[in-house]
Length: 275
Image 1 (cartoon, rainbow, N blue to C red):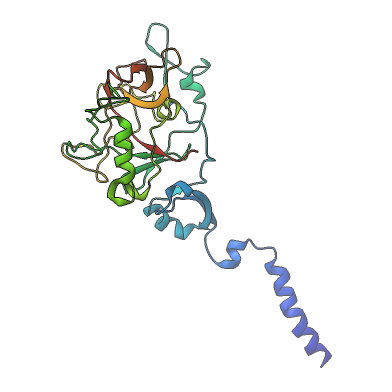
Image 2 (cartoon, rainbow, N blue to C red):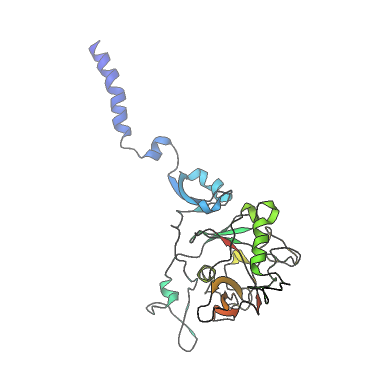
Protein backbone atom coordinates (compact mmCIF):
# COMPACT_ATOMS: atom_id res chain seq x y z
CA UNK A 1 0.00 0.00 0.00
CA UNK A 2 2.85 2.34 0.93
CA UNK A 3 4.69 1.54 -2.30
CA UNK A 4 1.59 2.29 -4.37
CA UNK A 5 1.07 5.64 -2.63
CA UNK A 6 4.72 6.59 -3.01
CA UNK A 7 4.66 5.72 -6.72
CA UNK A 8 1.51 7.78 -7.21
CA UNK A 9 3.26 10.74 -5.59
CA UNK A 10 6.59 10.42 -7.37
CA UNK A 11 5.23 9.94 -10.91
CA UNK A 12 3.71 13.41 -11.37
CA UNK A 13 6.56 14.96 -9.37
CA UNK A 14 9.24 13.45 -11.61
CA UNK A 15 7.21 14.37 -14.66
CA UNK A 16 7.11 18.04 -13.58
CA UNK A 17 10.83 18.04 -12.84
CA UNK A 18 11.53 16.64 -16.30
CA UNK A 19 9.33 19.19 -18.01
CA UNK A 20 10.96 22.04 -16.12
CA UNK A 21 14.02 21.71 -18.32
CA UNK A 22 12.06 22.13 -21.54
CA UNK A 23 11.58 25.40 -23.39
CA UNK A 24 8.13 27.03 -23.11
CA UNK A 25 7.60 26.54 -26.84
CA UNK A 26 8.26 22.83 -26.46
CA UNK A 27 5.78 22.61 -23.61
CA UNK A 28 3.16 24.35 -25.69
CA UNK A 29 3.92 22.31 -28.79
CA UNK A 30 4.24 25.37 -31.02
CA UNK A 31 6.80 27.55 -32.76
CA UNK A 32 8.65 30.29 -30.80
CA UNK A 33 7.01 33.64 -30.24
CA UNK A 34 8.00 36.60 -32.43
CA UNK A 35 7.78 40.36 -32.10
CA UNK A 36 5.85 42.48 -34.59
CA UNK A 37 4.98 46.15 -34.84
CA UNK A 38 1.19 46.23 -34.54
CA UNK A 39 -0.52 49.13 -36.32
CA UNK A 40 -4.20 49.40 -35.31
CA UNK A 41 -6.23 50.14 -38.48
CA UNK A 42 -8.52 52.57 -36.64
CA UNK A 43 -5.67 54.34 -34.80
CA UNK A 44 -2.39 53.93 -36.70
CA UNK A 45 -0.62 56.54 -34.56
CA UNK A 46 -0.85 54.08 -31.67
CA UNK A 47 1.55 51.57 -33.22
CA UNK A 48 3.28 49.37 -30.64
CA UNK A 49 5.28 46.18 -30.30
CA UNK A 50 3.43 42.96 -29.49
CA UNK A 51 4.58 39.35 -29.08
CA UNK A 52 2.63 36.67 -30.92
CA UNK A 53 3.14 33.09 -32.05
CA UNK A 54 5.14 32.65 -35.22
CA UNK A 55 2.16 30.94 -36.86
CA UNK A 56 -0.02 33.99 -36.27
CA UNK A 57 2.48 36.45 -37.74
CA UNK A 58 1.48 35.87 -41.38
CA UNK A 59 -2.08 37.04 -40.72
CA UNK A 60 -0.83 40.17 -38.92
CA UNK A 61 1.60 41.07 -41.70
CA UNK A 62 -1.15 40.63 -44.28
CA UNK A 63 -3.21 43.26 -42.42
CA UNK A 64 -0.47 45.89 -42.42
CA UNK A 65 1.60 45.06 -39.34
CA UNK A 66 5.41 45.03 -39.71
CA UNK A 67 7.92 42.35 -38.79
CA UNK A 68 10.10 43.17 -35.80
CA UNK A 69 9.73 45.61 -32.94
CA UNK A 70 8.49 49.14 -33.61
CA UNK A 71 11.03 51.93 -33.65
CA UNK A 72 10.75 54.07 -30.56
CA UNK A 73 9.03 57.32 -31.52
CA UNK A 74 9.90 60.06 -31.94
CA UNK A 75 13.16 59.07 -33.65
CA UNK A 76 15.28 61.24 -35.91
CA UNK A 77 14.98 59.67 -39.37
CA UNK A 78 18.00 59.00 -41.54
CA UNK A 79 18.46 61.01 -44.74
CA UNK A 80 18.02 57.96 -46.97
CA UNK A 81 21.48 58.44 -48.51
CA UNK A 82 23.45 55.18 -48.81
CA UNK A 83 26.11 56.10 -51.43
CA UNK A 84 29.17 58.37 -51.37
CA UNK A 85 30.76 60.81 -53.85
CA UNK A 86 34.13 62.54 -53.95
CA UNK A 87 35.00 66.18 -54.53
CA UNK A 88 34.83 65.72 -58.30
CA UNK A 89 31.31 64.34 -58.02
CA UNK A 90 32.30 60.80 -58.91
CA UNK A 91 31.13 57.80 -56.84
CA UNK A 92 33.60 56.48 -54.27
CA UNK A 93 33.58 53.58 -51.76
CA UNK A 94 31.91 54.73 -48.56
CA UNK A 95 34.12 52.75 -46.16
CA UNK A 96 36.24 55.03 -44.00
CA UNK A 97 34.96 58.30 -45.48
CA UNK A 98 32.75 59.34 -42.60
CA UNK A 99 30.21 60.53 -45.17
CA UNK A 100 26.51 60.32 -44.49
CA UNK A 101 26.30 57.44 -46.97
CA UNK A 102 28.64 55.41 -44.75
CA UNK A 103 27.36 56.37 -41.29
CA UNK A 104 23.65 56.46 -42.18
CA UNK A 105 22.84 57.95 -38.78
CA UNK A 106 19.23 57.89 -37.69
CA UNK A 107 16.43 55.43 -38.20
CA UNK A 108 15.80 54.00 -41.65
CA UNK A 109 12.93 55.75 -43.42
CA UNK A 110 9.82 53.72 -42.66
CA UNK A 111 6.19 54.43 -43.50
CA UNK A 112 2.86 52.65 -43.63
CA UNK A 113 -0.07 53.46 -45.90
CA UNK A 114 -3.10 53.38 -43.59
CA UNK A 115 -5.52 52.75 -46.44
CA UNK A 116 -7.69 55.76 -45.58
CA UNK A 117 -5.82 58.47 -47.47
CA UNK A 118 -3.12 58.89 -44.82
CA UNK A 119 0.48 57.74 -44.33
CA UNK A 120 2.12 57.25 -40.92
CA UNK A 121 5.85 57.82 -40.40
CA UNK A 122 6.93 54.97 -38.10
CA UNK A 123 9.93 56.98 -36.88
CA UNK A 124 8.31 60.28 -35.91
CA UNK A 125 4.73 59.05 -35.42
CA UNK A 126 3.46 61.85 -37.67
CA UNK A 127 0.46 61.12 -39.90
CA UNK A 128 0.57 62.71 -43.35
CA UNK A 129 -2.18 63.53 -45.82
CA UNK A 130 -1.91 61.68 -49.12
CA UNK A 131 -2.18 63.75 -52.29
CA UNK A 132 -3.87 62.74 -55.54
CA UNK A 133 -4.12 63.98 -59.13
CA UNK A 134 -7.77 65.04 -59.12
CA UNK A 135 -8.02 68.70 -60.11
CA UNK A 136 -11.59 68.90 -58.81
CA UNK A 137 -10.73 67.59 -55.34
CA UNK A 138 -9.33 68.99 -52.12
CA UNK A 139 -6.23 66.75 -52.20
CA UNK A 140 -4.92 67.63 -55.66
CA UNK A 141 -1.10 67.65 -55.73
CA UNK A 142 -1.02 70.37 -58.38
CA UNK A 143 -3.09 72.90 -56.45
CA UNK A 144 -1.16 75.92 -55.14
CA UNK A 145 -2.20 78.69 -52.75
CA UNK A 146 -0.69 81.72 -51.05
CA UNK A 147 0.35 81.62 -47.40
CA UNK A 148 -1.36 84.96 -46.71
CA UNK A 149 -3.84 87.05 -48.72
CA UNK A 150 -2.31 89.74 -50.92
CA UNK A 151 -4.66 92.29 -49.38
CA UNK A 152 -6.12 91.22 -46.01
CA UNK A 153 -8.87 93.83 -46.40
CA UNK A 154 -9.92 92.66 -49.84
CA UNK A 155 -9.66 88.92 -49.93
CA UNK A 156 -10.42 87.36 -53.30
CA UNK A 157 -8.27 84.21 -53.11
CA UNK A 158 -8.13 81.37 -50.60
CA UNK A 159 -4.95 80.74 -48.62
CA UNK A 160 -3.50 77.51 -47.25
CA UNK A 161 -5.26 78.29 -43.97
CA UNK A 162 -8.65 78.44 -45.70
CA UNK A 163 -7.86 75.10 -47.32
CA UNK A 164 -6.90 73.68 -43.93
CA UNK A 165 -10.29 74.69 -42.51
CA UNK A 166 -11.96 72.81 -45.37
CA UNK A 167 -9.77 69.74 -44.76
CA UNK A 168 -10.67 69.64 -41.06
CA UNK A 169 -14.37 69.83 -41.99
CA UNK A 170 -14.24 67.33 -44.86
CA UNK A 171 -17.08 64.80 -44.71
CA UNK A 172 -18.45 66.46 -41.59
CA UNK A 173 -15.82 64.87 -39.34
CA UNK A 174 -12.60 65.99 -40.98
CA UNK A 175 -10.37 64.21 -43.46
CA UNK A 176 -10.04 60.47 -42.66
CA UNK A 177 -12.11 61.10 -39.52
CA UNK A 178 -9.67 63.60 -37.96
CA UNK A 179 -10.22 67.32 -37.42
CA UNK A 180 -6.80 68.27 -36.03
CA UNK A 181 -4.86 68.53 -39.29
CA UNK A 182 -2.29 71.33 -39.52
CA UNK A 183 0.39 72.73 -41.84
CA UNK A 184 3.73 71.09 -40.92
CA UNK A 185 6.67 73.11 -39.67
CA UNK A 186 9.78 73.17 -41.84
CA UNK A 187 11.63 70.47 -39.84
CA UNK A 188 8.66 68.12 -40.06
CA UNK A 189 8.45 68.66 -43.80
CA UNK A 190 12.19 68.09 -44.22
CA UNK A 191 11.88 64.81 -42.26
CA UNK A 192 10.16 63.11 -45.22
CA UNK A 193 12.73 64.20 -47.83
CA UNK A 194 14.73 61.22 -49.14
CA UNK A 195 18.22 62.57 -49.85
CA UNK A 196 19.16 59.30 -51.52
CA UNK A 197 16.87 59.96 -54.46
CA UNK A 198 18.72 61.37 -57.43
CA UNK A 199 16.98 59.72 -60.39
CA UNK A 200 15.84 61.88 -63.27
CA UNK A 201 12.19 61.19 -62.55
CA UNK A 202 10.11 61.17 -59.40
CA UNK A 203 10.28 63.39 -56.31
CA UNK A 204 12.95 63.04 -53.61
CA UNK A 205 10.62 61.27 -51.20
CA UNK A 206 9.76 57.69 -50.26
CA UNK A 207 7.74 55.85 -52.95
CA UNK A 208 4.79 55.48 -50.56
CA UNK A 209 4.15 59.17 -51.26
CA UNK A 210 4.03 58.93 -55.06
CA UNK A 211 4.31 55.41 -56.49
CA UNK A 212 0.61 54.97 -57.31
CA UNK A 213 0.03 58.38 -58.89
CA UNK A 214 -1.91 58.44 -62.16
CA UNK A 215 -3.81 61.14 -64.00
CA UNK A 216 -7.26 61.63 -62.50
CA UNK A 217 -6.65 59.30 -59.53
CA UNK A 218 -8.10 60.06 -56.09
CA UNK A 219 -7.22 59.24 -52.50
CA UNK A 220 -7.11 56.79 -50.87
CA UNK A 221 -6.47 54.73 -54.01
CA UNK A 222 -3.40 56.69 -55.12
CA UNK A 223 -0.55 58.72 -53.67
CA UNK A 224 1.10 61.71 -55.38
CA UNK A 225 3.70 64.37 -54.59
CA UNK A 226 4.49 67.65 -56.34
CA UNK A 227 8.21 68.14 -56.84
CA UNK A 228 8.31 71.93 -56.48
CA UNK A 229 8.16 74.05 -53.35
CA UNK A 230 5.71 73.09 -50.57
CA UNK A 231 4.71 75.51 -47.82
CA UNK A 232 5.60 74.97 -44.18
CA UNK A 233 4.02 76.82 -41.26
CA UNK A 234 7.40 78.30 -40.26
CA UNK A 235 8.02 82.00 -40.89
CA UNK A 236 11.45 83.28 -41.83
CA UNK A 237 13.02 85.42 -39.10
CA UNK A 238 15.37 87.10 -41.59
CA UNK A 239 12.34 88.46 -43.40
CA UNK A 240 9.13 87.78 -41.53
CA UNK A 241 7.09 88.48 -44.66
CA UNK A 242 8.46 85.17 -45.95
CA UNK A 243 7.79 81.59 -44.90
CA UNK A 244 9.96 78.49 -45.32
CA UNK A 245 9.15 75.95 -47.99
CA UNK A 246 10.62 72.54 -48.86
CA UNK A 247 11.33 71.30 -52.38
CA UNK A 248 10.95 67.63 -53.32
CA UNK A 249 12.65 68.11 -56.69
CA UNK A 250 15.60 65.78 -57.33
CA UNK A 251 17.19 68.64 -59.27
CA UNK A 252 17.22 70.98 -56.28
CA UNK A 253 20.04 71.03 -53.71
CA UNK A 254 18.31 73.81 -51.78
CA UNK A 255 15.63 71.76 -50.08
CA UNK A 256 14.49 74.61 -47.82
CA UNK A 257 14.00 78.19 -49.00
CA UNK A 258 11.96 81.25 -48.11
CA UNK A 259 9.12 82.67 -50.22
CA UNK A 260 6.93 85.73 -49.83
CA UNK A 261 3.72 84.81 -48.03
CA UNK A 262 1.65 87.24 -50.10
CA UNK A 263 3.26 87.06 -53.53
CA UNK A 264 3.75 83.36 -54.24
CA UNK A 265 1.42 80.37 -54.51
CA UNK A 266 3.06 77.08 -53.51
CA UNK A 267 1.99 73.49 -52.91
CA UNK A 268 0.91 72.26 -49.48
CA UNK A 269 0.36 69.04 -47.50
CA UNK A 270 -1.24 68.55 -44.10
CA UNK A 271 0.05 66.62 -41.11
CA UNK A 272 -1.29 65.66 -37.69
CA UNK A 273 0.16 64.32 -34.44
CA UNK A 274 3.57 65.02 -32.96
CA UNK A 275 2.30 67.54 -30.40
